[in-house]
Image (cartoon, rainbow, N blue to C red; front, side, top):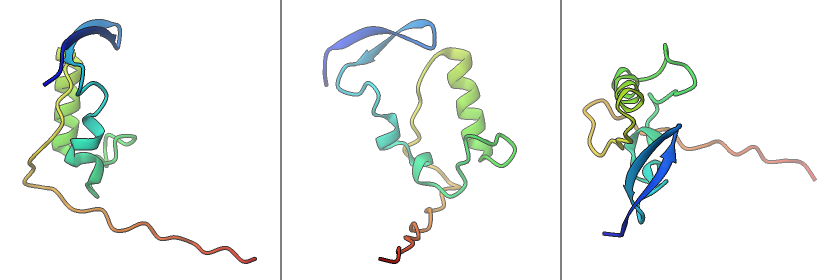
Length: 83
């Protein structure tokens, strides 16, 4: 574990382990889930919506490590260009 630092996050001072700051996307299952649509609150996963609402209300960051509704995103389709 790293040193605990303090910084401004969305206008409020918060504490974080320096080694983990900004890494929630690397570890959170949501970013690898087919049901995650953060730009569309209606289409987005209800668990992700609740998690985000709690994060905003309490000024915390809560990456999801385990989820009963997880669905792996399909692999990206690569379009091949013509020379």
